[in-house]
Every structure is written in structure tokens, then in C-alpha cells.
Amino acid sequence: MDLILVGGVATGIAVFSGLMALLPAAKTEEPGLGERFAAWRAQRIEMARNQLAQARLDVRPEAYLAISIAAPLVLGLLGFVLSVPMALVGVIAGAFVPRFYLRFLVGNEARAADDEAPRVLRSMVNRAAAGGTYPDLFAAAVEVARHRWVRADFEELLGRYYANEPLAEALAAVRPRQAGRNLGLVFDALIVLATTRQPASAAGEVLGALNEAARSNQSIARQAAAESRGLRIQALILAIIIPGLFFYLLLVNRELVAPIVDTALGRYVLLPAAVLLEVAGIVLSWRVTRLET
Image (cartoon, rainbow, N blue to C red; front, side):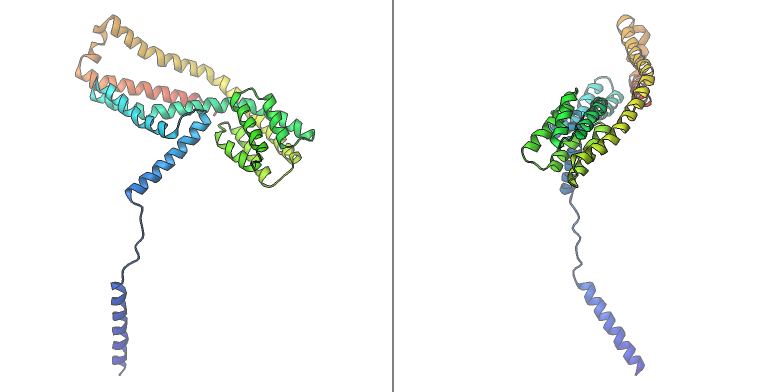
């Protein structure tokens, strides 16, 4: 009797398991190739939009992405005129040239904005101590700002404020354009103050603390830039002299460089290796001497 009961229970479990196995499984919808490409493209466009805004380039993100794709193809075709290895060098260089150029512009903008930060902060703190409101603080920044984009950002804040746009939203709209770390901190602090509805007097205290930090950071950055300027000049001279000497010999006495330009070993091995070493040396020298960042 017990065996019959156990067998019945086992049979019921087996039947239940079989029925559950026959039921259609819940399908997890995985993104297809097109959706993943669209997500990747949207992410790249957003990153390009932020970088172009910080570099102050009036270029559409889609156009920048098109240039980033076309540059390796164009330089690769130009390199293919010499040899296949030079075509590979051209493809590699084309993949990095637009990115490095954009970073160069962003770095220049960041240094210019950081130079303005102590002056702008001091003016805003003084205006807040005199009982000024938030638009008065922005107007004080416009009065003392020398860099055109810093002045334009605060003028835009004034325009948005008088257009009855919420202060926090106006600050958040301008914040992504800030390449400098000091001014970025200023906008972050102002966004928090505006979100929590703090008075301008509280903003003056916060900006006063940021002013001390900005002055200290700027002093360190200038000292580092002065110490690295000589190293940068040396690296630039070497980067110009080496290829310049090669082209000079190519024009004046081709026989001296004939093993490089007229032999298979030179075109396929020596010349591409020299180009790669030249580019690698420039990149490494630039990164080593960027002590201020």
C-alpha cells in the first residue's frame, strides 16, 4: 500500500514536470544588432557633443563622427601610395588624429578657463558680500571675465534667468561646456545652491572657499607649466628636426636615403617603423611634459 502511494506521488510529480516542460519558456528579449548599433551611435554622439561643447567648436557631433571614420580611410589611401605598411600607419594615425586634436582644444580651453576662475570668483564673492542676488553675481562675473567663452557663459546665464527659466536648469544647461576644473566646481556648487534654494549670501561663502582652492590650484599649475616648458620645446625641436633632415637629404642627395625609399626593406619595414617611432615619441613626450594636468 505504501509503495502504491509513493508510486502515485512520483507519477504525479513526473506528469507535472512534463507539463511544465511543454509550456513555452518566457523569452528574454535581447537587443538585436540594429538596436545595439543605435545605442552605441547615440552614446558616441553624446560623448562627441560634450567634447565639442568644451572645445567650443561649432561642429555637429554627427559630422565629427563622420570625420573620425573618414580620416583613417583617407590617410590609409595616402599611405598605400608608398606601401602597405605605410597604409596601416596612415589608418592608425587617422584613427587618433581627430581625437588628439579635440583633446588639444579642450586642454587649451580648460587652461584659459582656469586662468579666469580666481578673478571671476573674487568678483562674485565681493558682489555677494555686498548683498547682491544671483543675477548680480553673474553680472559681476561678466564684468571681469576676459576670456570670451567664460563671459559668454555668464551672459547666457543672465539671459536665461531673465527669461524666467529656473536657475538650476539654466546652470545645468551651461555646465557641460565647462572644460576647466575650477569653473566646473563653481557651476556644480551653484547648481546645488540653486536646487536647495540657498540665498546668495550662502553662495558667497561657498564661492569664497572655492576661490582659495582655485588660487592654490592655479599657482601649482603655473609652476608645473613653467618647469615643463623647456622639455616641451626640446621635444618639439626633435620632432621637427628628424623628419626635416630626412626630407632635406631626399631632395639634396637621394643616394644617402635610397636604401629607405628605393628598396623593399626600406619601404615595407624601415620607413613604417621610423614613422611609428616618430609618432610614438611625440605622443609620449607630450604626455610626460603635461605636468600641469
